[in-house]
Each structure stands twice: as C-alpha cells, then as structure tokens.
Length: 161
Image 1: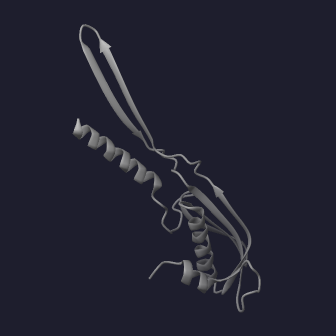
Image 2 (image 1 turned 90 degrees about the vertical axis):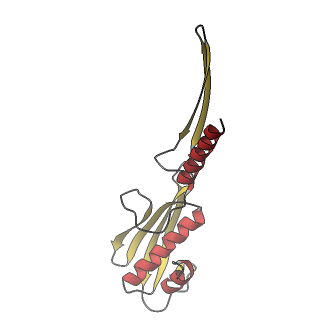
Image 3 (image 1 turned 180 degrees about the vertical axis):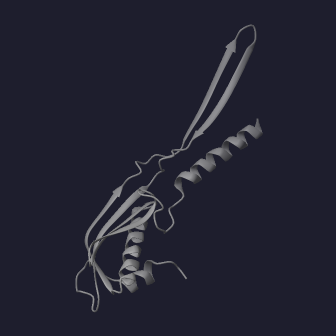
C-alpha cells in the first residue's frame, strides 16, 4: 500500500509541475503559442505580444523586453507604448485528481481502488497575454510617461548576464 501511495503522490507532483511551470522568454513557435510575436503596423509602429504562463507583471515585462529588442534591432533608441492590454487567457484550469472505490459481491467480495491524474493539455493556470502597440524613434527620448529608453529597459528587464 505504501508503494501505491508514493506512486500516486509522484503522479500528482508531476502533474502540478507540468501545469504551473512559468514560461521562459523566447519567440512563439506556432501561432497562439507561448512566447513573443511582433507585427509591423507602419514603418515606425509595431504590435508586440507575449503569451505565457506566469504572473501578469512578469508577462508584461517580457513584452516590454521584446519591444526594447525590436527597437534596437530597427536601429532606434526609444519606444512609446501607445496602447497596452493585459488579459488572462488560461481560464485558471489546473490538474485534476480523481479517486474511486467500488466493490462487488458475487459469491465473493472484492474491493477496487483507482486513482487518476488529469492534465489539461490546452494550458494551465495563470496563462496571460500582454499586448503593446509601440512607436519607435531615434535620438532623445520624448518626455512622455509611456516613453522608454530601449537600452535601459534591456539593462533592467533583459536576461541576466
């Protein structure tokens, strides 16, 4: 019975770990997948999106990081966030655990015990999407609250070296 209990707990732990692992920074591999995407809207305007599993502020920071990288890749120095949206897309689903028991008497009595762990394949808890519409530019950063120096953003939010 102890082996069964240990196996069951190991399955539950694995299911929980699989569903709550935070998204790491990177490009989305497929449409609607986890990671960043960006779309050019005009020559100096882009829409940056980051979809991931994690706290909303972490996901939004990943979107800002991508906006800074994109700005520098275009040979510019700063970006202004003209519009931003943050939405929860995961629905808060997590793993499920079921335990069942049954018995049958047909001359003999038997008891059965079963367990199962369900892992939602469509995503886990805390899936969020951050969307930024940005305008990029060169030279001195505008004196606007929504203006960001791309190098400073990367220094503060980018990968730790």
